[in-house]
Length: 62
Image (cartoon, rainbow, N blue to C red; front, side, top):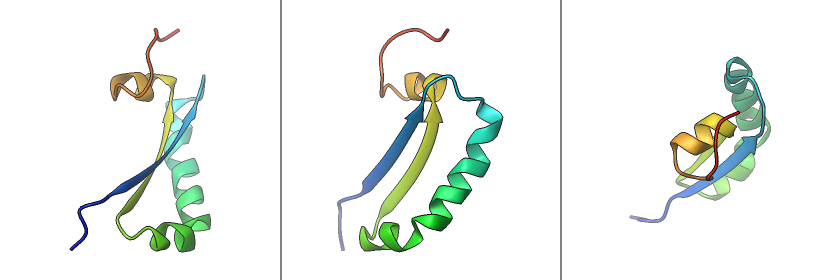
């Protein structure tokens, strides 16, 4: 059993939140084989606000 998890995170500044789910689905579909190589992997696509909320970046939301 592996305890290591990989998260591939794409942060797009000034990107509309409503466009994140379709882009995430498209990337997951196109990267499916690559993500399977990393067994427990997760792909996240976030805008600036989402990255701030998760503590991935610092600064202010414009």
